[in-house]
Length: 346
Image (cartoon, rainbow, N blue to C red):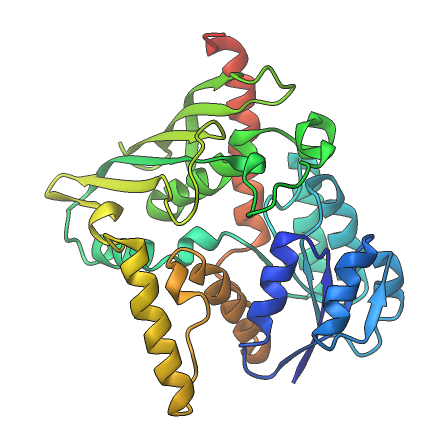
């Protein structure tokens, strides 16, 4: 049994808390959040050790094996550092940190501590992406030449049935590290690296449709360091879509064919949700393990990534997404911000 603490009980923290309840041999024994309302929700699901300051959680870590960190971007470095120095394994939401120097510092700490660290690059665990990766490794489309990746959504402006205020840190570059490029483009750049390896920035242009201090859109062109492959990234916060509609796609163009994620995801999200909900009900009835969030399709990746992280701890394996992956992605994003100053069409 692994004892786990959750630091940060916002939307992602609550999602990870729910997913942990479906992972074998995992028990959440502690949680930290500045919000009393959030802590009360954790108490209702049986978490006994509750803290308004995550430093106190780490101080009373005696029975903890790992922590899940879902704090605002600017708090990542310090919280990850303290968790690793406390001898805990760490799962953190992206970005690893908001600067290259902080990411390098975390990578050194991971090596020194001997603990496992994994970053939430959940798109790698989406069923369609896994199938596309398998197909390319088997040579189904030949050599990859061009990759188109895009995600245009509400960003921090998205809300549930009852709208809630957007936290100020999202729009402060010193706290967020950036806007749509760091938030959404981070995943897309990581996916390019996932398929072709080490990369470089060829072009970058940022949009400021909302006149914020951070960008709400980004177009980035990437090149592979070891081949002729190019990647075109389109990330934006400016589209008022409502989930389960999800404006994301990845298209791989090879010299022997192509694959599009649009051909692999459910055609009708509502029909898919009904089918998966029925399957999970059947699984419960016959005593089989359910597939958490499978009815949402894309959100199941959050469960799969956590399951992988805990499996790595139990079996002393290296997580698929390392501190170096986070570092490489933030390096490219910093390059893209610098390149946008020269290429911006503002």
